[in-house]
Length: 306
Ligand SMILES: Nc1nc2c(c(CN[C@H]3C=C[C@H](O)[C@@H]3O)cn2[C@@H]2O[C@H](COP(=O)(O)O)[C@@H](O)[C@H]2O)c(=O)[nH]1
Image 1: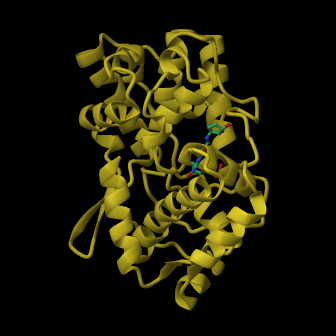
Image 2: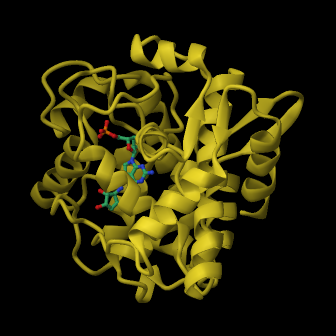
């Protein structure tokens, strides 16, 4: 995760479309006071949880598919989390490694009870197959074995996930440098931590090493709060709902500056209030604000990473 912190900080220092405003950070930190509003993991009540290895399997499948809902106006993350939960409740073997390798687009739609093709459906299927194949090859079919092999380290879990599953290697090249975001790999660790309440499969001694999860909701919340400022051209293209191509300077800056800004928020909170705040907690609070405010316009990038 040090790579994520260092490379996103470099982008923030060289960015020309997105600025992180220290005064905006100061204001937000002042306004929330010494404790961030506590948001419970699964505040929506949409996730599968049985307290055992099947939950780990569910979360890996969920985070393998946790990206790009916006091209369909009616689709959002809730549909995925709830759809996969209901599928698993109906059929406990739905996410067995051999089954994951065989799903087709129409079968996935059917599983999620979604009436039309999903955005980036072929990619979703490719990633499901990848997860099934690698689980079978290296982890006896079980995501719980993957988690057990990380020695209760979230950083090690992210390393293992990105080493074994190429689809989780979320990075970009920005002005000749490689930038690491690892959004879905990190959110998998945070989801385990949240679902298992820091115990069992969710026990990580270094959960503080996780950064925020660079998606399309949190940047728009940070902008609304005055933490991020956009150039006028970037602001107009987001307002016009134009697609911002994956890997462009604008897109990388939006994501990297969000990671950097949340790290700065947490540093300031630690300094001001002497409290260890986790980026994962700040993230969940910011994300929950964003999804409760559907009028917030977010950037639109076709990407398998978020
Ligand atoms: N930064 C950040 N991004 C997150 C999440 C989550 C869900 N986390 C769950 C974990 C426990 C909670 O109870 C949450 O349910 C999804 N996303 C991203 O949002 C976007 C979907 O938006 P919309 O199209 O409106 O549904 C998409 O990029 C998706 O990848 C998060 O926590 N943080």
